[in-house]
Image 1: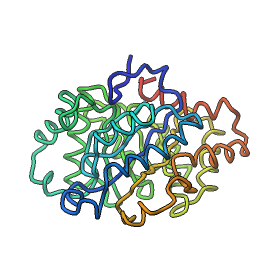
Image 2 (image 1 turned 90 degrees about the horizontal axis):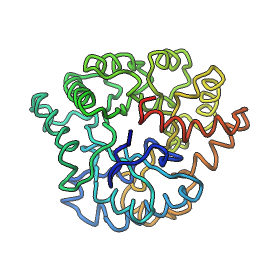
Image 3 (image 1 turned 90 degrees about the vertical axis):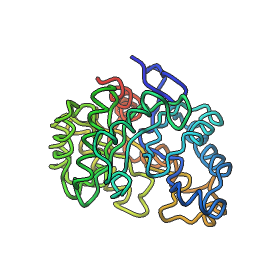
Image 4 (image 1 turned 180 degrees about the horizontal axis):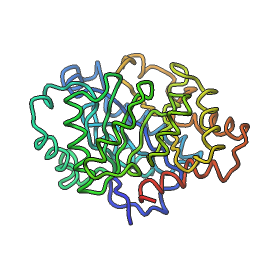
Length: 317
């Protein structure tokens, strides 16, 4: 079995250390089109992302999954350029985020399904790059009627193509079971689904219940330790789950973006010391892995989190 990369199939043996949920940028296309260089500069974002990811490559990273959905500014041309600049494997996503888009709300499920399938069959944005994973999102508001339609269409595409799904979810509202049920109705087993951002929670009872359903947990927000839960509680949760025998179902990543236009202005970002940030694509290697080793994880357990688990997720083992 091969895995769909942006330049064609990737042999599972060649995935190596894999960051399963990153972004090069999240930057709205309407803002880009209307405000140009005041909001975004393609070449500089490419150089920033490539520079930061080259540091991760030097620490052993081989493959990056860009989890940017269509309506968060997915840019396949940017991904292709950064892949060429760094020599890293890249896996692209297709799917829609959780915002209440009128462009999606007014369309029936068949149209949403057709849009997603066209990426998978024809390539993304006029290129021959095809997605290797589907992206969905459910936020604090839960599975709204619009999201039910989008997730159902996404599940149908997953069933037909065999692609796995990464679903942004908020563990605070504990609706992972509802998400898994919805995908299950489409014929997608829990083993093909990552419940993203599970590392935002320290609720071991809830996280264990989701693991018992057979899904994967994304411990994937280490790019936000300065804003959210913090490093130590996240590490403690991973260590506790590993000790309980669940280390083979956890996936590490940062959810980082070289330019995250939600709250970072372009002026601030482009003038920052972007090659020397404390939190970037190398934070897991510099800070998280040593902390996990201090909690008793050996090298085999570390390798599982970064090498074995991503490979097994993509090949369906």
